[in-house]
Image 1 (cartoon, helix red, strand yellow):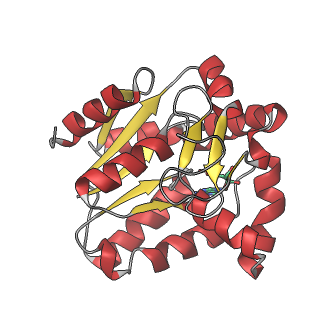
Image 2: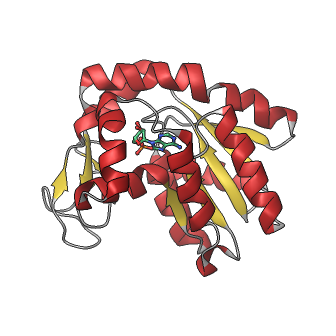
Length: 215
Ligand code: AMP
């Protein structure tokens, strides 16, 4: 099964992708995680992406499209994958179409997770990420068992630089301008399913699975 999780920052794409990846045995491919790992290592890719990420802007297309083209060739993607945070604009979606055509595969679904703006700020401001495995937590809604320690790998939890309020507002604007048009793009292709991104994490997982026909 091959699908995309679409939605504004804070919609819960990463949290749900993490759960679905485990339950369905599929790799979670998150461009944001890949870029943050490159930034941490200060690779040329990370250095190139840094200023865009810190400003809440999209990293140039050629960078992220190159990452995805390589990643989707991985042996672990043969049975399927979950795209989380890619594509984020119509040109990226068109580039993805080309990559998939070259690989002789197609998307099965695009799940659009909706959430209102007030909830986004609340969610992102409380979000904490594991420095080692990138697992995502929330200080109130999804706390780690031991404060600031990852349940999965014991790594240290931290707050992302771009989860500050000014940057959050910028990211929401980028979403509205560049990413939201994908709702129309995928709906015209008959792939779009809308899922309410608010409520209990487990209920949202159920709704996503039902939309995928695996619930
Ligand atoms: P995320 O973890 O998905 O919220 O992504 C964090 C940041 O990484 C974004 O604000 C962008 O700066 C960058 N990024 C992640 N995915 C993409 C993408 N598909 N296109 C461009 N920039 C991206």
